[in-house]
Every structure is written in structure tokens, then in C-alpha cells.
Amino acid sequence: MNNIIIGGAWPYANGSLHIGHLAALLPGDVLARYFRQKGDRVFYVSGSDCHGTPITIRAKQENKTPEEISEFYHNEFCDVFRKLGFSYDLYTKTTDEMHKAFVTDFHKKLYESKYIEERSVKQAYCPTCQQVLTDRLVVGICPVCGKSARGDQCDACGEIFDADSLINPKCSECDTSIIFNETTQIFLLISKLKDELTEFLNSHPYWRKNAVAFTKRYIDEGLRDRAITRDLSWGIDVPKKGYQDKKIYIWAENVLGYLSATSVLCEENNLNFNDIFGANSRHYYVHGKDNIPFHTIFLPSLLLAHGETLHLPDEIISSEYVTLEGKKISTSQNHAVWAKDLADDYNPDAIRYFFIANGPEKRDADFSFREFKTQNNSGLVGAWGNFVNRTLAFSVKYLNAEIAETSVNEEIRANVKNAFDSVGEKIEKGCFREAIEEIFELIRFGNAYYDSKQPWKTRTENIADCRKTISDCVYLIANIAVLLYPFLPFSSEKIADWLWIDLTWQEKTVKTKQITKEISILFQRIE
Image 1 (tube, rainbow, N blue to C red):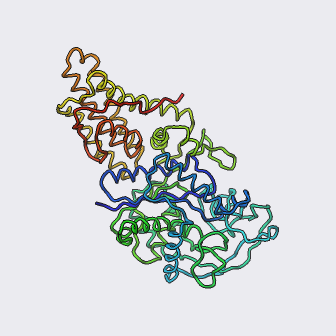
Image 2: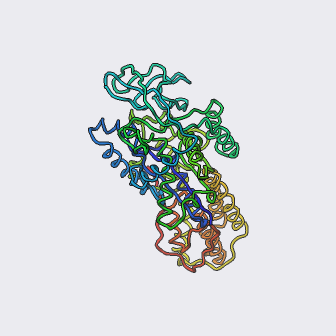
Image 3: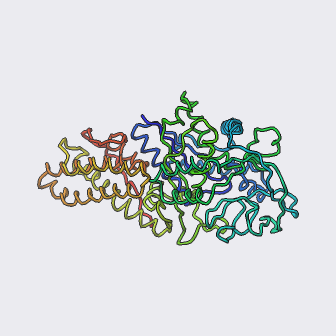
């Protein structure tokens, strides 16, 4: 049994999830369900990022506390993930006391490292608002690409920097030109880890192209040391004397949520955290491309500097963006489709199918309701749902739901065995679109086989051949349901109940002589 740690990105609890979040995070659940099917021990963890400036900004706008805002959206996230079948072993939040305690202990040891240094730095201050500004409250021109950017990252080119690097920096609240005062912060000396990070990158040539390209660019352009403390009022206290008015910077604590959540699961199951998070495990990190450097540069740097041989990331599942009707999603302009609305209005498997079969794995993907309808009606209703319904309903109506005890067609069996190997390999490599397409090729093969054997004719002309055809098709359905379970768990579980099978990752034979007669439609057309 292998230990598999799957970390889904922690969404900011300052607003509702949209379709871009779903597309980026769904692969994590596919991986978790698949590895559980194989019998591995899975730690599928994530949580709501409840600290940081976006929450305090939203709280100020709504005249609420940061805790009230983050708790509201955390609960909303939990509801959406539940409805869409996300099977987290632990979905927590950065305000959880267990997370705070873990991060505090981690930083105490981190501060003893040779990769930690105290420095005097510039700090943004708005003379009009008369307050210290966090990076996200500073706006200006990106020094790299020349486009508008905030003070910690440019959304246009992905560059990460400090606020004093911006051209013409201003306060985002009042548009006043800001000044920079001096303050002392704790820095992580990432620049001293160049050799280790370069070796780390070179040892993972099969990462997605965007992960390799982003990480290589950060290394080639010169790694910069990063402050891991900030003058904030909302966050985790810095466990060091003289820093009582500061908080741990969000990027130096939220990525540690993967570790803190895993440690909670280890404690609950009487497992040794260092064994599980050490060399004896395989790690997947699932997120959008804007989060790549946090998982390939910053998290590894924290782990290396900490010095306890904690396992570095193995697989980076970094998605491109999702556009809406050909345009970039903009939450500020309300040009978005909200996950909570989709989850309330549509079959969860239909939503999962669309964002996996059309996932932004190698390039940006577009969402439109017209295409969503087409994919549902042709793929789920017209192909898979049709194959299941026509086979099982025929069996119930004409064969008393009985399954003939006969050997399976050899071509069918060979196709199924090959699919288990091939689809499993694709899932483990993060090729989810290719994996689900291969399964649907098997579905199309099944429909073609059903048509060629014409059971509606043979039931009166050659009942033995008719029973054999239905038996072969039921075998196909059983195994396709297992293959599809990581992607479409709700419908696969229904089929498993109808055919009295389990969903472990291996070839199935329908041993029962009779399937259930309570067959229903798997998917509804979207009109």
C-alpha cells in the first residue's frame, strides 16, 4: 500500500468559487478516488485560505470582521464541494487552531535555519488613509511587462515582486501616491537554494509545460529572497520576540496547510507524520497556473530550509485558465459563472464531465452554456446513458433482469483489460482529458457492438445469442462504471448498486444471476 498525498489549492475565502476554480481543483478528486480504488492510503487535503489582505478588504467593504467574511465563504465552499462530490479526507481552514499550531511550530524551527535572515525593508504607507498598506493594497505598473499590477504579483505576466518594485505605486483605496518607510522583516533566503531548486526542477521533466516554464523562468531570472512576515492585523502571530505587531505572511503559511492537514489525519489514524510526509509517499499538488511558483519555488524552499528532509512535490497538476464565452473571467465585473449556482441547478456528474473532458490542461479552455448543453446531451445522455439504459432496460423488460452465465467476448475482454492499464497510467500522469476520452471510446465501442448484434431481433430469433449479447454489454457497463468512477462518481455508484459490484480498480465480472429491476435514467437532457 502506497501513501498518496494530494493537495488541492486553498481558495481565498473572500468571494464565491467560480468555474475556473472548479476546473483547476477537480483533477485532485479524480486522483484521490482513483488511488483509493487501487487500495492506496490517500491523504486528500485542502482548505479555505482565511487570512490575508483579500479577506480584510472584503470585510471593510461589507462592514464586517475578517472572521465573519472568511467563515461565510468557507461554509459556502464546503457546501459546493459536497454537492459536486469532492472526497476530501480533510477540508479545513487556515483559521483552524490545529493549522495555527502546526505553522507556529514549523516557523519556530525555520527561524533557526541558515536560510533565515532579518532585514530592514521598505514598507508602503498611504499619507491620505494614514495606514500601512499591504502589497495587495498597492497598485501600479508592472516593471516587467508594463501592464497594471498590484503590489505582490502581476496577473498579466505572472511576475511576483515586492510593492516597491512597482512603477508609479499608488494606494488602491484612494489613488494617492504612496511613500515607503523602513521596517524590519524576517526573510527566507531563497537565492541560496538555487542549486537545490534547479536540481529539483531538472528531476521532474514530465511536469506540465507551464509548470516547467514558470519555474525555469524564476530560476533563470535570479531567485529573490522573500519576506515571510508582514505588518498585518489579520493572520498567524510571528513566533519570535520583537515581532509581536506582525503576522506570518500568507504565502509562508497557507502552503503549509498541506502539511498541517496531513498531520491532523495522521494523528487521527495513529500514524507517524514524518513517515507519511517523508520519503515514503507520493505527492500531487493541484492548482491553477497562477499558483505554480508557490508550489515549485516557495513551498520547496520552506521545506528545504526547515531541514527535516520533508518530501518535496512530485507531481504538479497546474491548469491553464478557463474563459467564459471567449472572455476572461472577471469577478469584479460579475463576468463569471459561480460554482454554487451550477451545483444547485445541474447534475454534479454533468458538471464534472464538462470540466474534465474540456479541462484546461495544456491551453486555456472556454465555457459556454451552449457547449455545456451539447456535451451533456451528446456525451452523457446520448452515448453513456443510452448504452446503460438500452442494455439494462432491455434485460429487465425481456429477460427478467437475468444475466446469462457465459464467457465474455474475447475482443471485449481484451479492450477492458487494456483500458484499466492505459487509463490508470494516464490518470497518474495527470492526463485526465485523454483518460476520459479513452473510456468514451470504449462506450462507443459498446454501443456499436449492441447495434451490430441486434438483440431486439435475436430475442425472438435466437434467444441464446440475445442473452449472450446482453451479458457482454452488462460486463462492459460494469467495467466502464469502475473506470469512470474517479470522474463521474454519482452515476458509477448507481450502476454498481444495480449490478451488485464493487468499484475497486480491477476487471469486474457480474457474478449475480439477476440485476436489480429498479433501473432509472442516469442523465437528463439539458434543454
